[in-house]
Length: 517
Image (tube, rainbow, N blue to C red):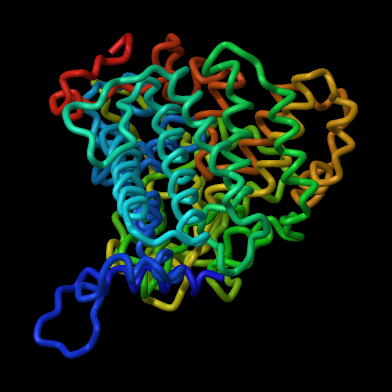
């Protein structure tokens, strides 16, 4: 599957190389209308909005911004003092200034993607050819733009609205209600043109199910975002995806994240990564492994990063839940052959050689910076996306081969169950076959009606979807986001949307700062 879409990334890069004095027909010598009359070329031409998704996997990205805003992952000061910049502490405590770098990069991820979509839509709409492939490509990019906008609206609330490449002047700021109405209308206006049945050709691209997934997120969060509950609509759209039989749960939870995971039957939309073909890299090993642990996988280039599971989040796992060890590295560590790993020179593999799942030392926050006694072996490290051990992984230059599944079928099942519970149908929710399977493949018993409280459902979502980018949104929807958790005090509601970055407001005088900042 991945090879088809990865080839587009490589071709797109080559198409941007200028050539002179060549006899061959290079792209720059072909009339645009002729080029866009071929459906394969349409896919090539519209690849840039997709390639920008790959920035998701960076250390400073929309993904890591969301991780640090939730209660899943923290970035405390390293034992050797190499980590602990203020931007991490600001996100952990939710005392976030508009100058925070991670917030600005999250904003840029959304609006760089929106701009690329506008460019592609303009070029396609203004080409002279009229084909079914062109109409579908335009619809695809419009839905992808809706996704970028939904991320922005979720995080920043009131955002600049611009859907035309030719628009002049400063974009007008629109409130969340306007934007959500526009996003929903945009999806419904284009969904009929999208591919119905996913295949190898559509891997990594927008399909009808991607559009339905986005609608489900809008309906599920509607009460929080607009004040109007739409649980019934959320349940209905999720059931459409379930009943389509386009997807199924893997037998083994870990198969969704393995090194070559492009065949996961749960992938509704994935970001393909390649150690050879993709420019942007996915490299969680650099942000979570210290140099000793990195040696297990023959990784020579790492930052001694301290991205790790937060102690109170780690404590929410049932001892039988296999997803804990599938997502985090803690306890006795073993090498790739299964032998205990002596990963600090001069020490043996005794009980002292254990990576502690919790940070045991006191951690104090001072002016947004961590000052801690974090030990070299403290903190459960991220292992959800296994690392290849062929000695090739290099930060910035060589990506992991694991694709990142942005939209996963298990999430659809859990959204469906939540919508049923919120409409007083818990007895129906516990009988959902795939919900039972999610529990049993995790090594747990299916939930009973008594078990299926909103609090327990939130924990289930967090364990199933750990570090996949939904926890911040979920914590807000379940009313937990402003509560205190590890190294974070309780806070007021203004933190549920982020500040508009200073640099962005400086560039657009029409943007008003969000309340409370």
